Each structure stands twice: as C-alpha cells, then as structure tokens.
Length: 560
Image (cartoon, rainbow, N blue to C red; front, side, top):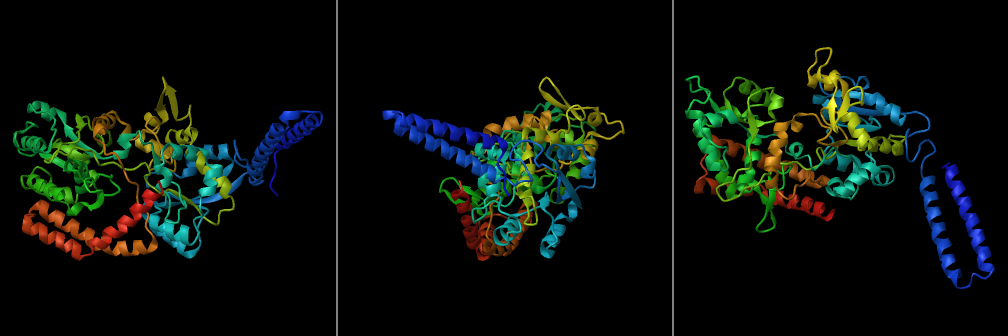
C-alpha cells in the first residue's frame, strides 16, 4: 500500500477546514466574490490532489526526498569493471560513504576491464544478470536489443522525471544530455557519464604539444599554420636542437595516427561535428552529410602528411605506437613535439606547451578534436530484475549531485581532500602517501572513479592530467577555434546496425588501408589514384552507408 505522509494529511485536513469556512462565508453573503472563491478552492484542491498523488506514488520502502533514500537498508547487485591497479570498491573511501548516506548496500561483482564486454554479453544471453550494469561498455546496440526490444534494460524516463532532480537539472541546462540518450523509440534506457561542457580540456583530451626550449634555441615561433608546422619540424630534424651533435631528434611522435589526424582535421575544415564522428560530418556549404574520406580536403591533408612522413618529420612508428611509446621517447629527450596527454601524464619537466589550432591551406582554422559531453553515452542501465528501481534511480541521481561528484572525484573532506581558499586539494594520504604510493596509485586505491564514473566530471574537482596547468592553458588557447556543434554518438535501429556493420567493416578497412599507403608513399593521390579510390568506395556501398547515417542523424535532430 502506498503511504501518504503525516504532514500531507495535515495539509489536506487544513485545506478542508479552509474550504468549510469559505463555504460558510459564501452562505453569509460573500456576494460578488463567490465565483472567485469557488475557483480558488478548486485550484487549491487540484494542487493538493496532485501533491497527494505524487506522494502516493512513492513506494513504502523509500523516501521521495532527503537521505537516507530507504527506510530500512536494502541490497542491490551491481556488476562493474575494475582495472588491474584498482582496489575493490568496498575498500575505497567513496563506496562505504555512499552506503552510509543512502542506506543502500551494493553487492559488487567486479570484472576485469579487458573481459567486460564478454562478461556482459554472457550475462545477458544466459539470463543470469544483475540489478544494474555500471561501466560495462554498454553500446547503442545493447540499448536497442536489451532496452527497446526486450525490456531487460528498463525504460528510465518516468523514473528520471520523478526521482532524478540532479540529473534533470543538468539535462535542462544542456539539452544534448537527454537528446543524445534517446533510442529510436524515443525512450531512455541508460544514463551517461557527463563531462561539464565548460571543462574544455577534458572534452578534447589528447592534443598536440611542442617543446618550447627547442623553439627558443632555434629562434623560432610556435607555428600558426600548416606550412609553418612543416618549417618548424624541419628545423627540429636538421638543426640539432638537443645539442648532442647527432641527428637523433624526432620532430613529431604521436600515440597513434588517429591522434595526429584528429588534431589536424580542423585545419582542413574536416570532422566539424567532433570526435565521435571521424568518418562523417557536415558539408557546411550544402547542409548535407559528408563522408570525410571522400572529400577533396581530405585528399590534400593526406598528401601533406605524406610530405611530413617522406622527410622523416613524423615517426615511422606512428602506425603502431601507443601512449607508452610516447612516454619512453619523451624521456629520452629526443622528441620535439608529440600527440597525447599533458606533460604531467608523462612525468617530465621538459617545457612542452599545447599547440594552437593551425590555419590550413584553404583558410580553415578550427579545433574539431572534441568529444560531446556524453562520454561515454551509456554508462549505467537498470535491469528488470531490480526490485527497487525507484531507490536505484535516486542512488544514481546522488552521483550527479555536487556532493556525489565530490565523493567520487575527491573522496571525503578532511580524510582525502581539503578546501583551501576555495580550491579543492588532495591531502597527504594521496599527495604524499605514507605507503609510498604515487598520486595515481593512491587515487586508484581510494577512489573508484579514476577510470570514469556515472557522474559529472567538473574542472574544479577533477585531478587528472586534463586539469593540469599545461592542459588548461592549451584548451584556453584553442577555445576560440572550437567547432560550434558537437554530435553525440548516434543510435541505430537493429536493422540499420546489421546493415551498417557489414558496410563499415569493408569501407572503413579500405579507407584505413589507402590512408596508410598514401602517407608512406605506396599509393598516390593524383587525379587517377583519387578517382579510383573514390569509385571503389561507392562500389562498396558508400551511398547505402550514408543513407543509414542520415536516418540516425535525422532522428537525433528530431529529438532536439
């Protein structure tokens, strides 16, 4: 049975008394005010009736507002990922405190990061799944299959409306939050991690950094366009800026080719809807979707990269390198510029500063290597086995509150962090760990959110490399050139997914193959080579590929 609070019963009784008095006044000659009084009574009665209805919808076991969430402790089962360096969540400071606040105990099943997808798929296929999937790499196909079609992931819209005021406040401020979550049937089946749109260094993440002492020693300025970048890299290669008398300098070293291309696309007017859409963007002149790798500007950009590669200005390892390779080569002192995360993530004192958006050969100068605020889009889903979906939604919504964000990013005030002159700072248990742990190691032992969480990532609380002075300065430099619109991940129907999967497998593989060959000089993008390449794309089904993409894009636009 649903309960009506004692306070609300008192309000109802009070309003009935007022109603009776008003009736008596009308009978004693209230005259011309009788209609107004009657309407006023009706409006008040409707308000009380609505409040009573909302309150009566709240299950007996929980509270609609305030903490704890439940009258008596409950337990929910949650499966989540754990990286090799993370402590069990129960051993962190955040999770026990969350239970203390909410009254909800969690039976955690933690899965190795590398096995998350396989575990998720096995659970869903067998029917042996938990109350909540959290940080388990839920994708758009999962949302369609297990949400829209099978209802294994329950639809969250009503729960969000009634029990998620913190999430709703964010969604109202940033409409992309809800718009980007909606499945083709219009429902929401999972909640995201949200990056505060004002935290621009986090939205971009990896970027290009250049060594300032080499620029100064060679009497050079930071490049402002693609031609100047070539000139600077050439000088790094030929003028011995490290002063050891050997030609061992690496002008540019990136953690992968995609990192370099993503950070250069804006100089050719490409990828103008952000990093979630590296193959398709918008042709600003026609207002039509554009396949990036079939555009003439893309052709020119690859020819530019071929020039850099052929003159040994970018490392040969760019096609196979990883972040650890960047770190190792930077520590060797031979790298003039690199693509990746801020210098603090490398652990170097070398003065690397973020590069600005470069002007390209056709006058384009934008910074398009930006993620949408939903990153990832689908971080958590509630399943149909959950006996407490209302309480679970309130439990999740706490994580979107300021208190919840601080709890997962910083821990507990007075234990793991303190506030000095308005700034949030880790205490010695993290900064100078008594067990000799580094800051990163201490964070992994004390906070479960280091690898992302269902919450909001805000600059004032976040302590990763994206919040370092170098990263913030780099983001401030490129902000005036940021693209105006960033698309979230699009959601496809099951049929579209099946068709697109086959098309993408062939087309994307072919694009990657020719891209690599052009850069290293094994394929030439002259007119003949370009025509042959684009014809092959259409023969492989590019028109159908774009038709499916357009359908998903139009649904996203209609959700706005």
